[in-house]
Length: 111
Image 1 (cartoon, rainbow, N blue to C red):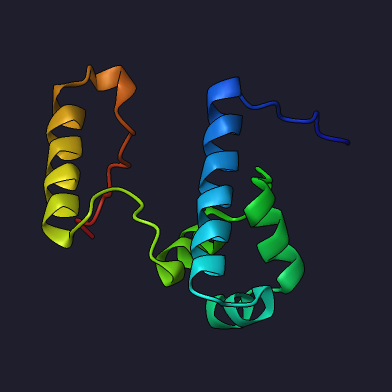
Image 2: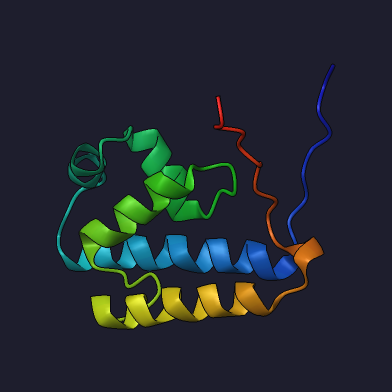
């Protein structure tokens, strides 16, 4: 069975292109070759090229690793800011209706 192609919103597509372009610009500013960055990130050069083009099929882990190596900030300029964002996300999730929160499995461990 063949899966239907997934389309992305215009906003998501532009965000992926912007992040890829930022990674490429930072790589070039640091005078790194694509092969050097790919080796440091543990990915192929072809995957790095796809990341830099903003291809939505790239693994988010590979994209984030490439971005972090060249110094592109992903969420906050510092770790404390990231911790604050994570705490805020947890608070937001607690305020969401139960139907919007991920379900947790009840574990029966009374054996």
